[in-house]
Amino acid sequence: MELIERIDLLVKLGTYMKGNDQEWIHAKEQAYIRNSWFTPEFINLSIKNISELYLQKDALIEWINQYPTLKSQPTQPKTIGIVMAGNIPLVGFHDFLCVFISGHKCRIKLSSKDEIILKHLVDRLSEWSPQLKEQIEFAEMLKNCDAYIATGSNSSAGYFEYYFGKYPHIIRRNRTSAAILNGDETTEELERLADDIFLYFGLGCRNVTKLYVPEQYDFAPLIQVLKKYDYLAEHHKYKNNYDYNLALHILNKKYYMSTAALLLIEDANLFSPAGQVHYEYYTNREALLSQLSSNESVQCIVGKGGIPFGMAQYPSLNDYADGVDTMQWIEDLN
Image (cartoon, rainbow, N blue to C red; front, side, top):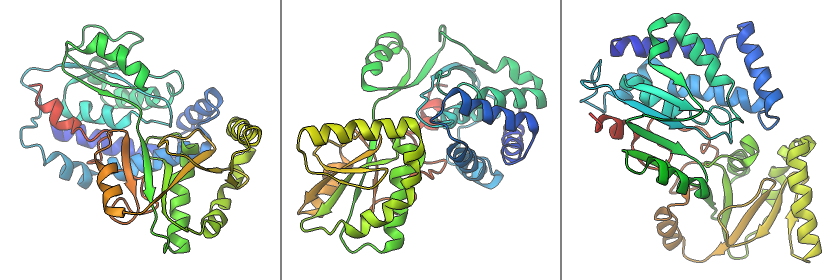
């Protein structure tokens, strides 16, 4: 299959994802039934972002033009195994996209939390181009691959290193995102920050779980705008997390601020559980920015000098999950 044919198939897929085919609607419904964290709101948001930011012809061509060695067909096709996470809907789509556009074979181990939507989309691609049945496959065990891309937690990364370490590999660990506030943010900027915190229930590596604020920061305007996501408290799993952590803080007599759907806790830890965000005071913004930029646990820095407020969950084709250029890595396999 020629490169332009793969591009055209992806564009067709993007159009399909924005449509109302009954089987497509059913697949999305089943994904929510299987995993209640995947609400229709967040499934549709992920699909909208992929179809509009990834699967547009101009964007795809501009992206692949950065890789002049990319050929219609690899001289020596490889089988690349992908272990996908399941924290947000279609979180592994970009890895799939990179392998597919490169022309290599793709063998995918899906998370049990997110195993319906991508399978449906691959079925559609295979209907439009039956030869893809030999190029894309799903497997419970990723054996006999030439290279691996594996995404998981810090603990699972050790297993990935053990099993895949002798092959070319990209292994991704826990990451999260932080925001640096100056204290002069507008209401609109704070509302966008609320999106960075709450979208996908805060479960993605691009979600802000840590706020850095100047000394004497006034939290009142921020707390007010965070209330626009109070409706998430109606979600039983999210509310269970919120209530559990609230009970711990009350028992430990720890100071906290809250809305109906979020706890704000002063804590040095970058990572926070669902329903909670940590904050910390800073005095030197440039030193803090340098420190966060070199921290391997930080996926995104949001705020002035970083990603604009509200854009953390809208990555482009060039926003690679861990700063490693996946496309270049694949090209270097040849």
